[in-house]
Image 1 (spheres, one colour):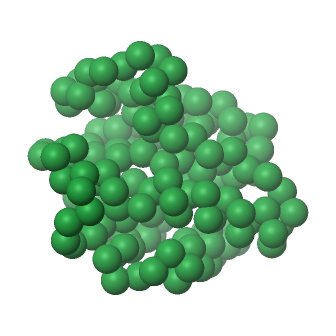
Image 2 (cartoon, rainbow, N blue to C red; image 1 turned 135 degrees about the vertical axis):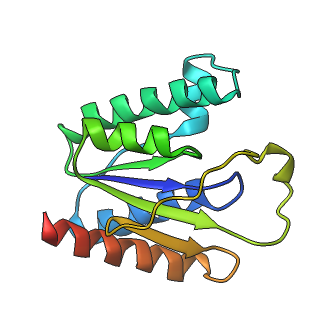
Length: 155
């Protein structure tokens, strides 16, 4: 399974990805990789923040996640994924994806980096929305892990 934590910058993606990874390690006694969108962008020197540049970076992340998902039971992705086109690409190359949409209200100091044309996700069974201005880290982590276990039981 690929668990994707996505949302605007400063919504808590990386923080929650690391917490979920630790929780799954404790409960399942297995270590699962995290793919961070910013790190992939650095590795490939992609400084193109246009829609095309973002989609290219996200498709690359999707391909790497798919490759790793064949080696590990779970891969955790932390990336903005602002476009339905990029989300659909991941689902076209790997069928077992759990989407966790993180949103928040208020200021966290990264609003200048927000994607202006961010497309809200289409509601479906493999999507869990979390408001990180309301849910604290521990509660959000438990929600994500419970969602993962529920979804993984269905596959």
